[in-house]
Length: 157
Image 1 (cartoon, one colour):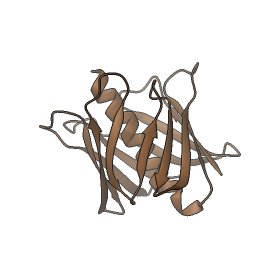
Image 2: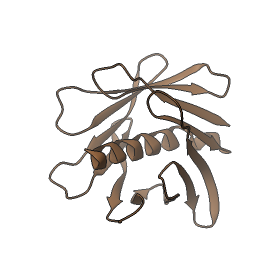
Image 3: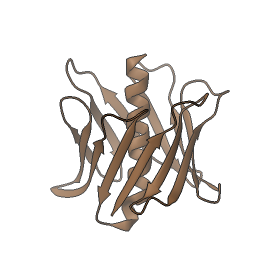
Image 4: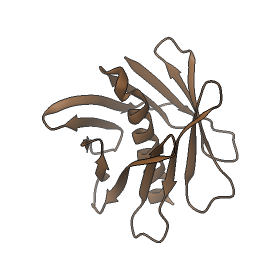
């Protein structure tokens, strides 16, 4: 299965449209303008809020809490590295391994492959493709890559 995540380029805040593998709208992600740090709200296609990604302020490196249905489910924190982004996550028992450019990520649970996240170059705005096998990982994978993208944006400021 696959999700396509496209960042809207000409918007006041971080906004993403998320499509299924048949390019049907599936989710919508929007940052709140009045919040300090990143606070991204994830909505289903009927605009019901299903998740929130909140940046912790007053931290040395970007760190985000992830909530689903108003319940805290995990945390992602960028680690200090000289060359490529690396993350420490407390989320679903997963770990994330990324490549040198920070464009491709593999999500693993123990020794099992959960999903592959790939950044698509040559697009206006950030565009990611998530490939996953288990439908139960769809929403949690979406929240994870939105948090990683927000951490990369915070790091580059």
